[in-house]
Length: 352
Picture 1 (tube, helix red, strand yellow):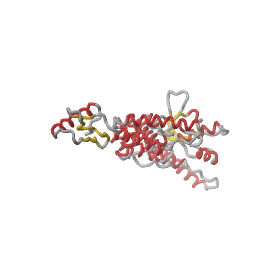
Picture 2 (cartoon, rainbow, N blue to C red; picture 1 turned 90 degrees about the vertical axis):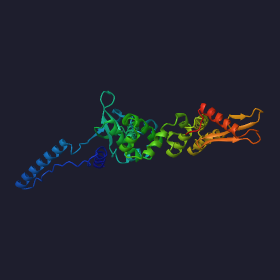
Picture 3 (cartoon, rainbow, N blue to C red; picture 1 turned 45 degrees about the vertical axis):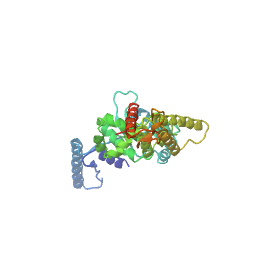
Picture 4 (cartoon, one colour; picture 1 turned 45 degrees about the horizontal axis):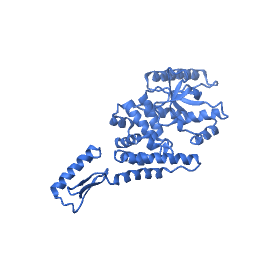
């Protein structure tokens, strides 16, 4: 397993061919004749020199595997997975696997840190393994060691490695990944979306949607039982609704109501509201606000309504022209211009 992980790491971090396995030294049999043994020793020496030369030239990447005290290893903040949200329940399967196998079999990837007296390394990939080993050491398995491979990585390479591993993990939520991408876009790619998409080999459109979800306010996220419940597709629909300044306050107000309801249910030991219900109620609040009658009404000099704004939403503005107002097309055209100007001044104008 360590061999596979070594090859995997090298392939991820290299734009060239994957790392090759170094030549291993052979041990001659004691019963072998003297001449063959001398020939074998010479071959072994040449093989060793060849292997060292390949390492020195960079053709072969050396990966150091260590047994570490997890307390001396911190978590790299550039990883998408939230360490604070890991629990015994979420790591139960991994914990049981480590116990059954007598230790951690798949090494984590770490890099050395400088200037931190409390830590010697930080985890780039393997956050759940670190949490599980730490939990086991605190619960009857003090001899458990954190198995890790040390790699020399800059922050951008570390981010790409962590992202590739997290893509295969179903327990890393869309929101965690989205916010991780948003932070990386600024930190590693100078806010250039196209460059980031190319480096990660992701669709630019898909990445753009993830970044929109990352921008959802914390007040909206709090309406869900857990941030894990915020999936990409429904989260993107919420982000689009929040773009409408006229309906965003209604969504936030409903989110506060839902957050209080979730807390009350947790305190009472009741099941929390499912994500689908929360999503529906938030979007219903936005639609109700969008479909509500608006304040602008233009009346004739005789006090009769001639033109009124019925609704404003993402699809456009609905205007009603009242029958029996007693005004002609020119007056109605003027009224329409006044209505559009008033809405523009309020920040609710027609989106071009």
